[in-house]
Image 1 (cartoon, rainbow, N blue to C red):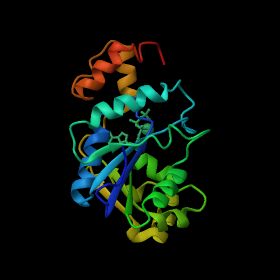
Image 2: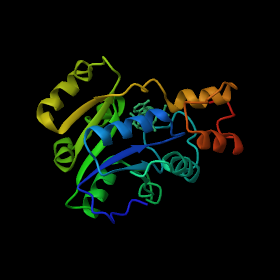
Image 3: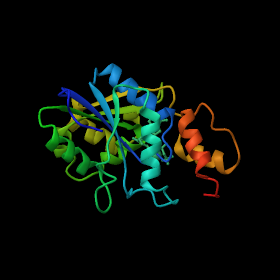
Image 4: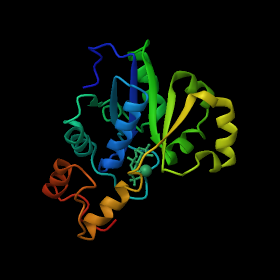
Length: 210
Ligand code: ATP
Ligand code: MG
């Protein structure tokens, strides 16, 4: 679903566990597309996420399906199976490499929340990574990413114009909170697309205590 029939000049990549995908993800991707004039945004659900060991991650096909359901109404949004179909653990750097190889003349923009950008900045070979793509980090209105950590300051100096920040109003939404709400019998209406909500209840996701 991430084929390049139209020949992208610019492509946003939004990686995530998407367990489940929610309006925070969608609003962020759309804001990034709009502000940076991206031709498309491809959502990349992770296969076996290396950083999520504190709860049982829902099976990849179910998370993939919810992501497809969520983006169906946006003609600029696609979903990629690249991490789901890859053997072993998935790392965003491998995904960036894969897209760069596939679309060598496309400018790649890796879209993340502020928490994820800080994680990425601690990767090895970070300067090599930022030569391959731009980063768009979503922050809450009034939230100063640069004030977050000395590590960020250090890397930000090296990257300067390669990391952009955007302010997104829906940043308080999280998959963790949605899973908790379902487990506690609270409503998740208007936090996720209706089709995603239906998929969750139809398949009894998140009903057990986590
Ligand atoms: P969890 O609570 O399980 O960690 P999550 O809501 O953080 O889930 P992920 O799938 O971990 O969702 O996140 C995928 C990407 O989306 C990450 O880059 C993350 O920073 C970003 N993100 C998550 N929630 C939001 C939000 N409300 N607004 C903007 N970006 C978000
Ligand atoms: Mg998260």
